[in-house]
Image 1 (cartoon, helix red, strand yellow):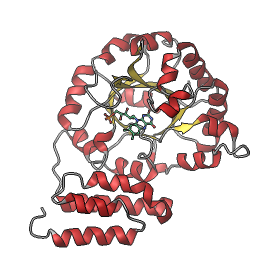
Image 2 (cartoon, protein in one colour):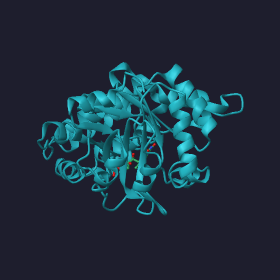
Image 3 (cartoon, protein in one colour):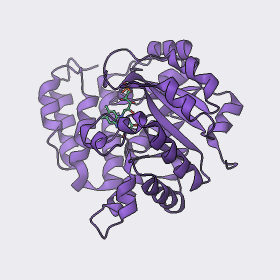
Length: 330
Ligand SMILES: Cc1cc2nc3c(=O)[nH]c(=O)nc-3n(C[C@H](O)[C@H](O)[C@H](O)COP(=O)(O)O)c2cc1C
């Protein structure tokens, strides 16, 4: 393993790591930059297809788009690129490309995605079920980079538990593991089993982050206490609420006024447009909807925000909302 293992540096500092988990369609550069402002230590890219990188653009593989998806700013470091796929040689080639051309701080392998389109290719959760192939994939990545390699797994996929999976690969020099404490069967709801971290700990030499259902400071404390993990992976809890990182980091609840949240949404939108241009604004709409969740008279506001096409429109919608609700807004 290389000397630039940022995971190990955190471990040496005995610092609880707060990471933003990979969320396809959400964790783009603009959002990651905002998360960094609120104290996120490590940010992950959206998952990227190794097949797309392997086939390049000649066969319509979408390599250019994938490389675009993985672009990042220096301020985001340490930045981890997450990859998914099912074929070891695709992983090997994609790892080379990412290491040489993208130059992130780490590479993470997805073993948890439950989306049928992904599982049908033998990727994501389907790869966690196939121990032998999963091992070959990890080896292919390790052999083709000097960056620290991490994995993201689920508590259980069909008959393969996280414990069995980790035991099978326990000799491989992985730097970190994020455990989504829900089974494939649970999908994205229900309780996450944080205690599992303790079970797998003896068989894994890298850092372990607990993930799943951490939406508040209280839940973060509970997850850390139950898991004894080295850190946490935040997911949907940080959508429309990037200051969740600050709450956990500073150990105090933060209650923001509606006006302040609208300012954050606007800042997010401005960064997004600066990086991706207004043509991509449809990709930001779902973020905007998360910000205004629970606002007074949110339904009209949400309906307007999810159809925006330019920055001026967003500014106008927000200003109108503020004026219309002037008396009641905090
Ligand atoms: C919209 C969405 C997209 C996701 N995309 C990814 C992904 O690209 N890679 C991955 O490993 N997990 C992905 N996940 C799973 C999350 O990283 C996380 O494990 C899961 O949401 C549980 O955490 P939470 O309950 O805090 O949201 C995604 C989840 C959601 C809801």
